[in-house]
Image (cartoon, rainbow, N blue to C red; front, side):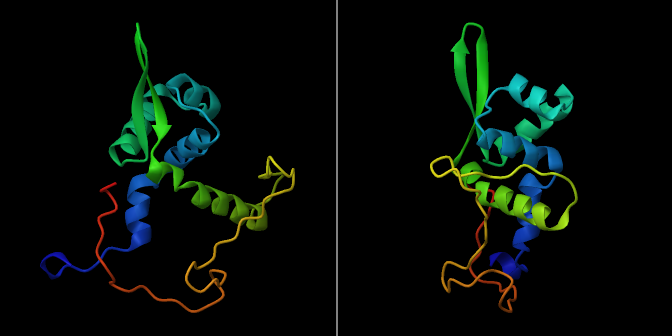
Length: 149
């Protein structure tokens, strides 16, 4: 730990990068293949100034990167980085939680190869135990700055 500081909660640190609904929805759309500003705006119904802020924040935090797709006129698209791709299980778990606890007809995740519905669960890779079935605690552990991707 640096200078005897108390380690930050990983949930709090993660939310610093993706902690608003618009950012999470941009990442959802990026996982469905959207890459361009107008595609995100149309899908989300978000005002351009808010979308610009969210895309900049996600780019600054290393979840998206800008790539030039047209030189004349110059146009950029937003593509998922490794950190952004690693957010997919989080999106799926939010969806699974909503299916269990929120009202309304909700879309389902479907495996393209089998056509069967995907039922995401979170497990501990070390023990194989389903998260939430065993007691846990936060530990200082190794320090890692989540902003360095």
